[in-house]
Image (cartoon, rainbow, N blue to C red; front, side, top):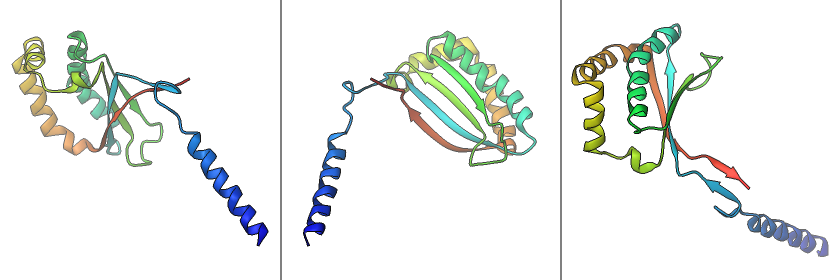
Amino acid sequence: MRFKAALVSVAVLCVAAWAVADLTPWKDYEVSESVWQVTTVKVHSNMDDAYLEGIRGTWAAAMDVSKELGQVEDYKILRSDLPDSGDFNLLLMVKYKNTEMMGPSQERYQAFVDKWGQAKLDETTEFAQKNYPAMRELTGQYLLREITLK
């Protein structure tokens, strides 16, 4: 009976020690103000290069304009070396200064349209709607912040 009581005491102490070990934001780690919007994409077999060619003229080109206007800080495209495994094989990533820069803004939208051009906006939208469904499936979307441990 004493053995069981000792075992329970040790278990309770371990759980209590684990609870005390919780980290505190800004004391034990920093949370970045910037945020990454990550879209996971499953590009269909044998469509990798065709999809990349398409987003070079649509998504990436639009990101270049947004970056030039200061609307986004950075963007990245990551592709898996194992394209037919898992739920996705491509990541489209956009880094914003903060969540406010992700929100709707008529001023930012108009600045983008003025720089990009309404004709180009219409052309890329039509291309994407016509071609992308046959090339890929969007499988998820995430908002991520960088964590820096102290």
